[in-house]
Length: 410
Length: 121
Image 1 (tube, helix red, strand yellow):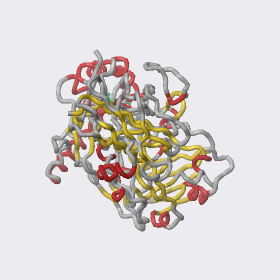
Image 2 (tube, chains in turn red, cyan):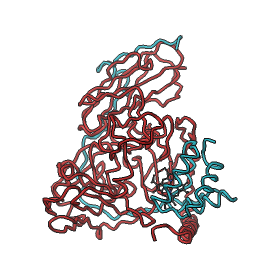
Image 3 (spheres, protein in one colour):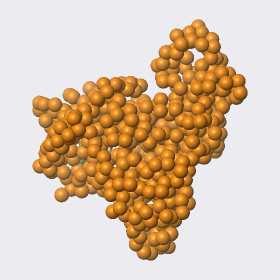
Image 4 (cartoon, rainbow over the protein chains, first blue to last red):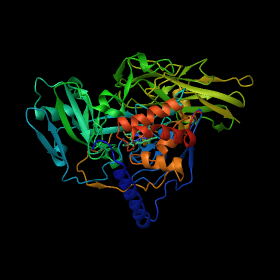
């Protein structure tokens, strides 16, 4: 059966309803939009409102993009509180609704196949291997998709499908060396505990062998000093620093060395971008040479003020935010308070490593009441500069333009 | 932008930080964390997902075709999509993901979406 037949669909739906009833009784009704609080996202044409929810286990208040499987977005104010995103506010994104909810740390094994010998490792065994650790931004390929103009289908994220954490784990190279690499190996594929409901390809991603062996790509067991939350990929997650989150396979339990290119759906068909500079094509274009999405681009966001905020007049206004270089560090962040006519360097916060966020801050002088268009513009250490004009592609991937933050001084 | 004239003054390190202590929070930004020494079994329960598209012919069709794999919000939070975009999406759900409806039902599902989901009519 390669299609979910209507009977099964109905059974699943019924089972869900039954489970819901049981849960509702036991847990005293974990109603979803429990707080009644709403996030207002600025998305031309709408819908712009999303519930704010704190009912997901291990998560604080999050923007609810989708209950099942969960898509939870981090509110921008969280990024103003520190350079690292707390685990309980870190965004959540799953593709298939059969996600791991109960993982036994003793029974869990990570297996590696396709090498010279099969490998199976328990968590305690993995904890004994040599470790690496670094800060890295985890950002969804479609972060900010809801701001595309013209709009495109997909998860309608604002800017919060991202987070920065310190990851700790074992270099993927250490694990692959244990398996022994056949000279014919070309790529490495990663799979997790989440499963599709139909007989279609599971959500699996792969990297070229050289990339997988670069010593930086990591199999992480800790995030900001704690074991990974289930919703963020417990017990192991692949970390591909500088690359989009689609490669950071969650609940990683299987690694396979492949002799050829990976032809599975999630590599060959999904997450394809135009093979053009910055994945940019004229709005509306559907036909173009495609390539799988890969490295992130340079970005920055003002976090001290929300767009649309009314700010009491004062001699000057502090402006803070976070910036990232993409797959390199941050060289410079400039701030404008006149819609991009003039720019001034902001002061950069401590460098936490080239793959992480870098905080910036400055003050803008306020002359009078009225509208002000704040902006920030990051230059990466490789010289990439955020463009003023947004890129566009039908997948809604890789937005990285300068984001205006219009406010009003009152 | 006439009444407002603004200049940006790059905040100079010392004075700025003193004037705006809230602008920098170095104390709350740990540089590193203690190494993890053990991993404990993890178990959670997700909140219920009771929402449907409601009742009626359109809703029945969407309830039966679109709720096995994800919540209604996957549909409700889309931007206003054209008929062509909804048709492409519905076709993808069936061809790529194995959604439980017959190819001949595609048009009726698209009609239901055009009538009840965000759509550019």
